[in-house]
Image (cartoon, rainbow, N blue to C red; front, side, top):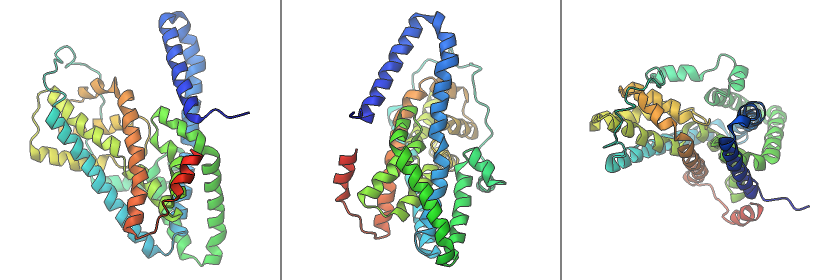
Length: 352
């Protein structure tokens, strides 16, 4: 029996969701029990399954990217280039968002007199310093960090573990690398097609296996893909960065607050730091936006105004996040003067 293409499965699911939502809207007497006892548990199970494989894939791929990619010196060079690229691109994305918001002024002229004193706000601490952020990256217990999906902490441990493996003689490290390779291959092979569904849940990190597979078929070396893509999902979220720039100026304009050039430059630095480590978790940008507004002294009530439509916005930012992390390994490969075989495009298109 011929399998229905995944894209049509997604479209069918979306249409079915619209019909079910319309039915509940017209028959509210059936909504409570079915929503709480059937639909919500099924939705929670789906999201948990999407998140379930992200941490082990990141952990395994990072180890392979280091232990299977030459000496520690070459890894260090690639790591510095990757982080430099990520910080530069996310900073540029934030600046683009700020520029668009200043040019088009989406919040100017909006009457918020009826909601300006809304009690719906998010209480966040001001943005933390670089040393405090670094302190939070180092895990007390790596297994706790894995269970809580703290990707920066998992990445930190994986880097140390990979460097330690790389310093061992090849005959001692090879069995461990082979086991990690097997786990990584199993997760990517058996979950990549299913995880593309995560686009519908706006969880960009969940499509990591599919993205890595396509990059390898395109011809990017595995050692680059295995390092750059996992790190990118913690440091290179371009769509979310553009959103942060636009949303911050939007809130300022709503409340008639004029931010100077120096204040906006400080905002760029703040957002570049606070946006790291979000790891593609659905809705994380709202939390980062709250921290940014708090650090800038802007009204946190503005978050409530954006939260109502954020689910629509988040689908677009997710797409840009994935696109940015698809481009990054190509850039790093060219920067490392690594040959890429474009002929792999035909195989990718056929498999898709």
